[in-house]
Image (tube, rainbow, N blue to C red):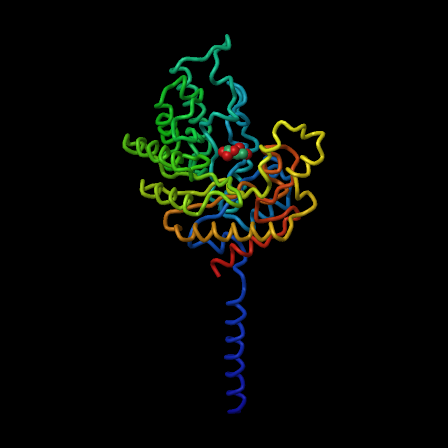
Length: 374
Ligand code: GLA
């Protein structure tokens, strides 16, 4: 009896030890679990995905991410194509999907110079409307869209890309017609429509010093005027060799010092060469140029895969270092097969910017990122 008791105890201890060693070796299973103590991790969903045409991407989204952004469905053009027409079918489905899976739902985007229906700026003669008319239309748009999802969309990109590269204000139609306070008004209208929603400024290349300073000026002025701004989204359309970690970090710190949340939005890492070099060559005819700008159509060489892996690892190390101020990291797409980077700045290339490949399989970069929290 005695030896049996001793035997069971030893066995139990052995089992616990074995599990301890085994469990310690296991990867956290998903991105959202791995980073749950640090920030939410998300993806952008395209209209075809929201509509169910890419079920594997949806399965991956449910498995890996706890926040979603609509890639296009909530932009002004798609959602409000004509003065009396709002199209909410895709955005409704998007919000329902996020709710069903308890996700943080990010709204993108209310006021932007691009993908915005031109009618909003014009009267019936095709001339620019006046300030009052445009403000009234802006308010109608914001209160209708934000109001529809009140309490359901948790944060809105109120203002996108209002700055030039040198940090000055972009001469958008919004600025030209309304004046500088169009930005403050946009935030105020959004706040009125859903007082509890978080409100963000979102832009690209915010790692450049001048644009960083411009962003700090802009957001500080809004805050000084008593406007509710909850966060700054740094679009992460980055490359293998830019921005430097120092540049990205300087912006994270500068924005956090304003007392707002910092988000890495629209993250994807371009691995393809800059086609600008071949501008002027007849790219459609010139095979050499074609191959040079689209070098990995048959697969990514191991050396570049490794660079991508290292790049993602160093970026996520930086995000972890500043996870006290970073609230969200959102990829601009779920898998390489669905990324705008395959078609920009030239169409029809094969790019590899995300953590999941065209077969929906995790890439080495995915495991490197998870390893950081192991
Ligand atoms: C900007 C916008 C995004 C998207 C990308 C490119 O970053 O904020 O919505 O359009 O350009 O697709």
